Structure formats: structure tokens, C-alpha cells
Length: 196
Image (tube, rainbow, N blue to C red; front, side, top):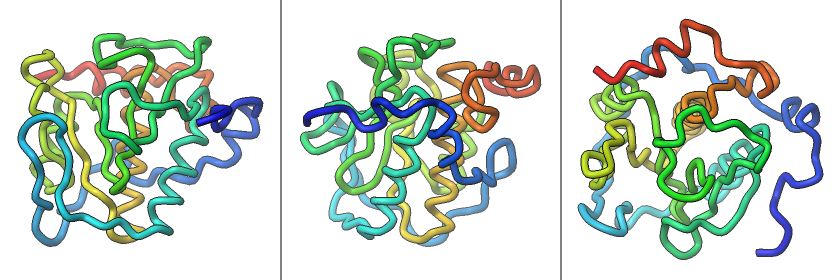
């Protein structure tokens, strides 16, 4: 894949590119329409979903603008998936939330993503129709590991983006909206550690 995306840019320039994440720590709306058909096994993915190329490009732009995140080949997903890797200098507050290496998440070719979220937030995303549990979540002891469905509209992209920001905060212990170098607020850490 060549040089990693995001490499060589300072945290300050990346932070300036982060768009708002309007639903962080707020109730999620109900996703309209049916859930996509997915596999229940490995690889865990949607079937027959064709992403909007503009939304997919914007998702990738936002994802790889997160502080200390670079694009590298995924080690846990399907060919063509784009891995979101934390740089060596990035803290990992919850190493158990990372399945392999320093891979925070990955964007599937169809625009869906696997994310590790606080368990309560993952349950909310599933109940609202935004996600489904990963088939290995219980086996791995990662109750918050979910597949978040492909965004079909700009509003749905904002939901996925907000969940990705929450996943970043959950895994690293840092809030990327405050520059990425500051620890998440005590209230956010309490919510992030909720597993019940």
C-alpha cells in the first residue's frame, strides 16, 4: 500500500480537519429501513451493499484524520479493507479492545466498520439498528465489538463518525476532539468503562 496515510502530518493539522461528531455521548436516533443482510461467521460482513462513493471517501477522510491514526493493511479483515492503525506513540488504554496489533478498526470495501465500543453504547447501537454484535465478541470477551452498517446518507455518516470517535476514545483513553493528547473527561471514562 505504500506510505501510510496520515504519516508526516502533525497532530495539530489533523485535529483541524476533524469535523464535529454531533452524537458523541448523546442518544442515537433509530436507523430507518431494514438492516442489511450479513454473514454470521468469518468473515463477518454485509452482503449485497454498494456504498455511495462520496460517503465512503468522506468516511475515510475523517477516519484517517484522527490523531495518531494511519492507514495500513488490515490483519483481521477482508482483502480491500483499510486498517486504522494507531501509531507506536499513541496510548492504548484498553489493549483488550484491540483484536490484533495496533489496529483500532477497519473500513470494509462496502463502508461498514468493525468497532470496539463501551458495552452499553454497543447495545444502544444494536437496538437502534445501526450495528450488530460481531460473531466473536462473546468468545473474545469484547461485548462492545460490533459491525456498524454502511452509511447511506450524510446523516448516517455522522452517526458512524460519532461512534468511531467514541471507539477511539474508548480504546485510547483520549478524546480526539480535544486535540487527541488530552485524556477523556472523568464522566466519559465512567461511561466508557460501563460493561453492564
